[in-house]
Amino acid sequence: MTRPAPIICLAHGSRHPQADQAVFEIAERISESTGLPAFAAFLDFHPATLTTVAHRVVAAGYSEAVVVPLLFTQAFHARFDVPAAIAEAVESIDATSSAGLTLHLTDGLGTGADMEELVADFTAQYLAESVNSGTAGGASAENAVRTGTASADAVAGSIDKLALYSVGSSQPGANEAVAEFAGRVGARLNMRSTRAFVATGDNPGRDTEALLEFADERTVTVPLFVSPGLLWDKAKIRMPNGRKCTRHLGDAIAPVVINRACRALQQAH
Image 1 (cartoon, helix red, strand yellow):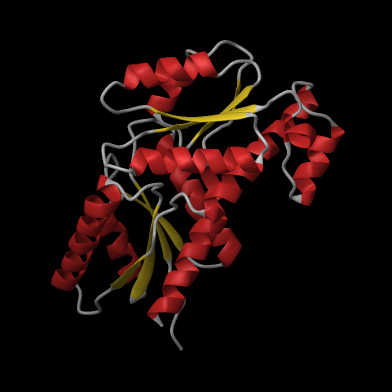
Image 2 (tube, rainbow, N blue to C red; image 1 turned 30 degrees about the vertical axis):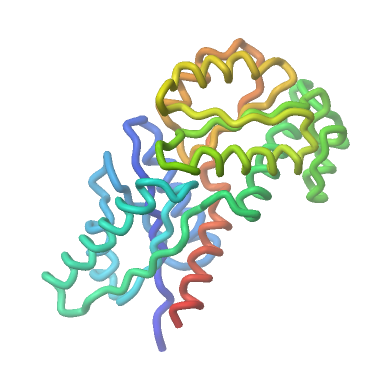
């Protein structure tokens, strides 16, 4: 009988001191949810490269694993860095182990319907929890989250604007895809106004200034970040006290990662 394949969460990596732990927590939640081994690997800034983790997988007796990139767009990292990391890992295993290892690469997190629902629910949950401190909504907000409905009246209360802040990309179409994604998330939450902002690009300071201008007391800002990031920290610290900002997505993405992995294995077998 074939052993179930482990799941490898492949993150970009960050210099932020808390970023690595967030990715390990995602892997831990996946393992707890599925009963399968799950590993964290990084394209950069961490010794747990995909090659290193692949050797750990082989040492544990597995002949295949599923690699899920924790990336939101089909930009440079997804199109070049991830395939290169896969190739390097397979080459290293083939050169040092007779067992071999098949790595099944899935789509990244992306900006599809499942991530749209996840980010909308994540935001609604944040707004519902803020009810406890008396900053938004009311008892109906908590009920809205429990029942899976998300509306400005029931969940957001006085919050009717959404700002989505992402790293950004120079790849044509990538930022536009995130902006369109933001619009769909805002529509799920019945927001009056929604805008997407990027941390990098030709004039990153301009977009950050635009975010600070847009994000008033009626706005919730959501960082489209898997883990804490220095770019988000720089923007958040400039916001006036009292502005509503969710945390990074963190292990909330675990169900989407699991679905990606299961789909890839079904297609492979």
